[in-house]
Length: 208
Image (cartoon, rainbow, N blue to C red):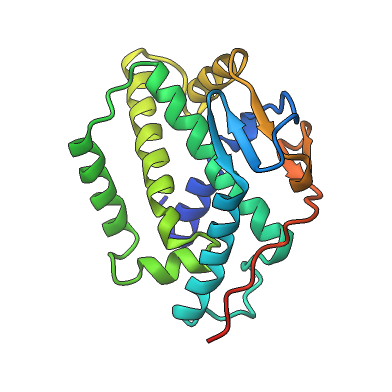
């Protein structure tokens, strides 16, 4: 089945988030989240929220679309982009998956072409609550996932629905803590998502 552009981006922004486990919330106030030894600051999250809103204005995105997140829901989606990127790329690195600059460039070029090329990329990202500046995170994560898929295939592991990758992530997380600043909400372990985010409702773009 051929995926639509919307489906491809939806897949990338949600991929592997369902296997994350929250193991603590003792972050400093200026830290939005951390995974293992890597962290993302509150400023980075707010900058990305602001960038999404500005990109929507610049690309003249229809604000009546039900797919456009706002306020704390947008902040939540931005958090999940960073969270998925941190986990997947670190898992791939620790499994000694060879992520080369040339391989990444080739993969990213192919992915951009698959959704219609660079001319529509900014608008497509804006429509899916992703800042243009964060596209590298999406592309890096997708590249790492593609390599993990290849590794699973080479090892003859069951991975039709991402089982092998999920197992690798769960194993990795047993020794690497994920921490989320509680002001962004609570971890729902049953639904594998950040629920009821409060505060930090997103930053409105400056008026011209």
